[in-house]
Amino acid sequence: MPVFRLEPNEDARDAERWSRSAYRGACLVSAEDGEAARRYADAAYVETGREGEKSSPWMDEGLVACRAVAATGEPPPLGWVRNQETGLVTDAKTGRIFHPEGMAGKPTL
Image (cartoon, rainbow, N blue to C red; front, side, top):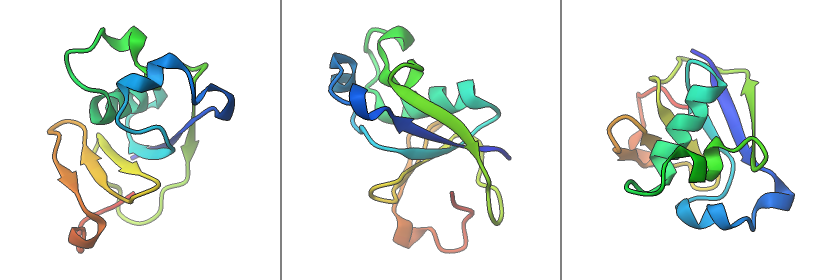
């Protein structure tokens, strides 16, 4: 399963759209492709009921870089998003959040 690294562009971290996201740092995402990785990050970090994809910083190529990275070990399920600062993993499909200490025996990013 492909893994993507999404990273906010340094010169765009103060953009107004970031106010819609609960997180503004790099993350790893298990996804079918780069566009899906952006959607999963959007689902994990942007509050629902907002103005839609066009207002999300994660969907904007000018605000967030997205690149495929080499995955190691057992691939995690599609839609898992790992916060690179805290290690928390969010299942973007269900909204469930996993703490790194509770991940023993589970595939991780």
